[in-house]
Image (cartoon, helix red, strand yellow):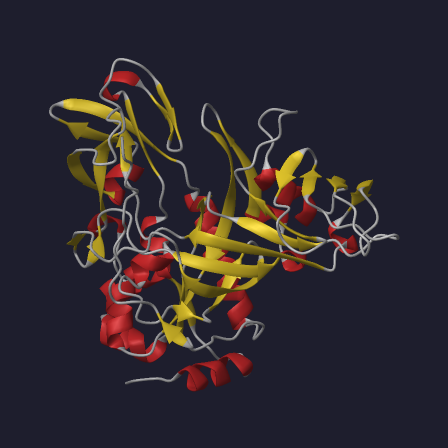
Length: 382
């Protein structure tokens, strides 16, 4: 039986909607079958909580007296972009502070959400309409006119399993990789991950209402490096494929779901909790969302190879990875996750609670995502 967005939202408003997490759907479909579950369930909630480097925030400070056109901006000694209008800026999660080490834009964003005082220093050229040339003050998120997260690339559909065949330790965005394949790291919520539960984005598009960092947000566009040409197994990609660009008001967010990161030997970043509700419009939606960790695979890649075309050493399911170890050519390799499955479960559960309480309705996308997308490389001459 097909359903519409409006029918589902009416049930949400009446607090009669039946909501399950993507984790719960796996067992439910095994017990009852997809067709029966599609009749009974209205919304499936997904979740992920991990590093999302391509993230940041737009901020408007408001004007000082006399006003200033900021062209050089530091927030807790982290450089923010000074090429926007007079008192607008964008701070990126991977921008680093020279002092202290290990502190960056992701930490500034976390501290703003936590209500902490942030040291603002800014300089400008001085003009007839913006006569002030420098400013040195402290701000909190409550002092700001607007403060919203805008993330060009979040929620990678899948990602590599990283290992290292060389004789030296590597420090990468996939964490510490020990020599001679003594460990392997991965970063996905697997069966809970938003884009693995809607692998061809049949329900997720521009305007989709989401959980972002503990507050409400929206899908604003396809993410950068949006790729539909990756190989699939069991109907889902086995490596990085589709991504989402996301937007949300930081004044609604909760520090629990937004944390600055210091990835040793690599740099700073940010971890964000994202939850996407999937409307049960038909049986096919349930069939796609009932995929389990046993059925979702990723490629193991050798990160000691410096070329972007790193060799694939094998494929492993997320059930195997979450067991704590895998085998490769007779050797046992310890596995660990850079994303938090506990956090992903918490995101999906909280979003479920919001919907059940009638506090969060679904939105029908105003534009669906491209059916074709290819990632291009940078040509370097010489």
